[in-house]
Image 1 (tube, one colour):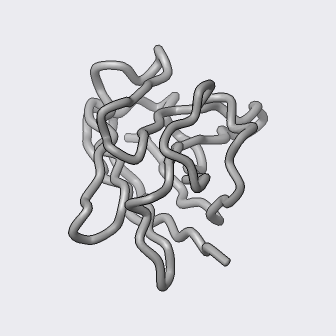
Image 2 (cartoon, helix red, strand yellow; image 1 turned 180 degrees about the vertical axis):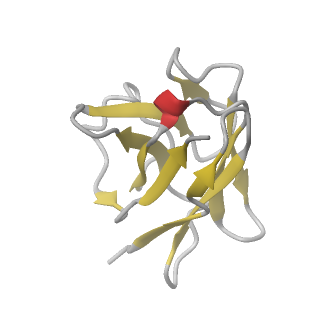
Image 3 (tube, helix red, strand yellow; image 1 turned 135 degrees about the vertical axis):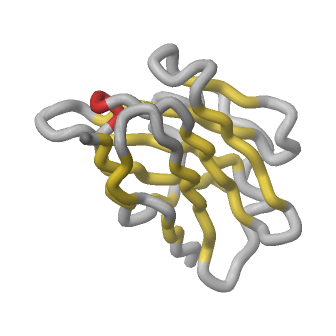
Length: 126
């Protein structure tokens, strides 16, 4: 069974950057559509970004467009989320999710993913 592991979270000042990575223990994510989601304290889960198997289809929440970039590292079999110009409202636990499909239609809804990681905490604060 696919076990997803997120890494790269931490404490960063507003305006700073972090790079999150999603990996699967013993597996490559090259054949899985991947989504990144977050849950802020007291809020509903929010879809942040997603990417197809080919990497040719990506999507972003309006709140992160122009600041976050999702990408695949096929050599490592991982999916990364580069987060720039971070804001306090980006503070949340970030989760990656996977489904063994080429692409997910409503990829920010979170409904179609089979596997979820445990999350990595991102705190944006001065």
